[in-house]
Amino acid sequence: MIKQVVSIVGWDTDPETKQQHWIVRNSWGEYWGELGYFRIVMGKNALGIESEVAWATPGSFTVDNFPCNEDGSNCGADGNNMKAMSYKDPSSNPALVKRRQLRRQAK
Image (cartoon, rainbow, N blue to C red; front, side, top):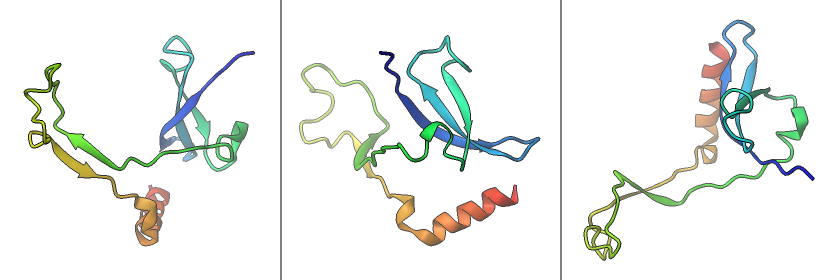
């Protein structure tokens, strides 16, 4: 049995055809496709890519990351040396999503 995992990492529009497509990373590595990536048409559920999807939304995360010493001495036990941010899910604001869709259609 061949096992494969793909991750949708973005989307784009072909400048010539104006067709939107997903940009997908393949688990088979760089030797396959476009250095391990491929494009697949958007909005047609090709290969079930839009109906068989799972996703995660990050909570808080650090920015300006740097390597910590093994004992954590340069990172601060309380985390004060690291700046944390929280992810705001854009899909929770329908007006923003609609505006983004209209912008992409206008291109």
